[in-house]
Length: 86
Image 1 (cartoon, helix red, strand yellow):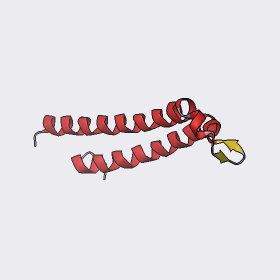
Image 2: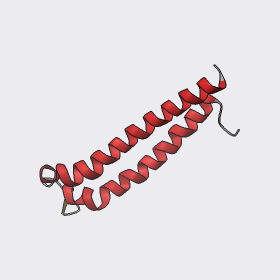
Image 3: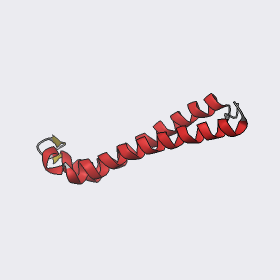
Image 4: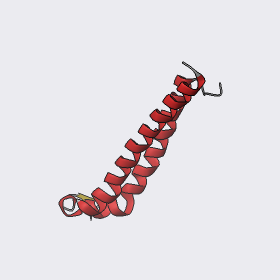
């Protein structure tokens, strides 16, 4: 595979990862915290309604987890396309 084709494939896969992870974050933060709040409020975590918990804490936790997932995915992608530093 040529250098340009390699870089294009790498970038396309990177964008796919970004879109998937951002969609998950959107669903958790906007969906669980706002759109599905009433349905989630039927459940409780630590005495607080689940919809409130997602709006206040859950989306932040998910965002931090997604950062670690992205780092792991990018490390694998770097190795796959030969861009790793080792």
